[in-house]
Length: 408
Image 1 (cartoon, rainbow, N blue to C red):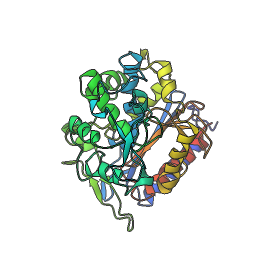
Image 2 (cartoon, rainbow, N blue to C red; image 1 turned 30 degrees about the vertical axis):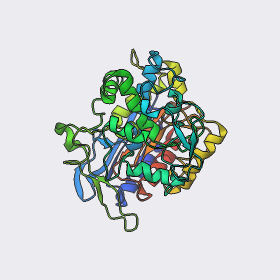
Image 3 (tube, helix red, strand yellow; image 1 turned 180 degrees about the vertical axis):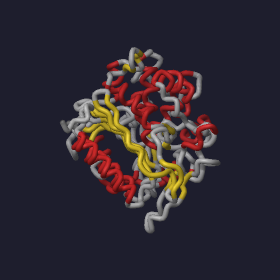
Image 4 (cartoon, helix red, strand yellow; image 1 turned 60 degrees about the horizontal axis):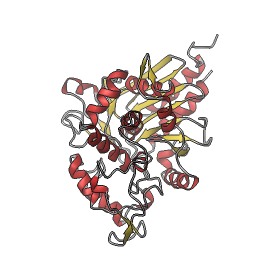
């Protein structure tokens, strides 16, 4: 005995539940929903409430803001276009994104915006999909003129200035030089938003329409999108960004009348999705199944392999690791796993309990989603506590530590 029949031990699942409960009982995480699955058996925990001062209990169908865990899902839209030869990895992006023609590149990443040289070559589809097109959020360069310009122009989410609609966003992006030569260096986030614009222009439809038709509907991801319809808004908890010093629960985004109550001007592939544990489970299970869902093929096997194996050179990986280790309270061990495929992290060395080959990503709203081909495990943990304090990052770390001990 001692087995739950799911490839997890009963004692291990109890240990997992106990650790999750401990975080909620400590008062720093109002509530959470966690899903673990292995070999077709799925185990879900919904613990706590949707508000720090009570509210309704968390449920399996509670809808969460996925933040950067949007990245591993939005990339699939581009993979569909690669599979169908509507895009090629080494196509130039200029026919669809003319705003990015004739790029200038900063002489020094932290230098003045007018001290530039011409780009050595044009930007390709591959550069965008691998987050190496030359511009991104570089936490090591905060305060540099280029980072200030990115924020001032409303090119990233979560600022008082909402992101403009895609054509205006592209126009503003096109006024800036690149930080690095195309293909040279991995940089976070902006490539994932750019990808959504590229997909929309190639297909002649909105990014969300294409995702819905080719991904969400075939996978049964009914609650995934870029906003929450009015008839479901009661399933969306408020998002908290606790005060970094006092820990007081400050509301970052309310459900009613908040950012996700209406369709956004910009459908952000980098951080704009809302979803549930079951919707995300369907997606990551499809990746573990080499692109199939039941009898449907969503992505080709080689497309999934391309997404979920490391694409970075050793030098590029160094830059990515620097980002993880510089953000130590956010990344703990989870962010420090070496590689990056397309739209997601790929573990290239064993930095904690998870094996090499695990793929997925984490989100600044207190979300984590990974799959592990070796153990055939999917783990998803969703909260509504942003990473202004280490509380949700610690919870995420403990979730993975106990999940890996629960494997039979």
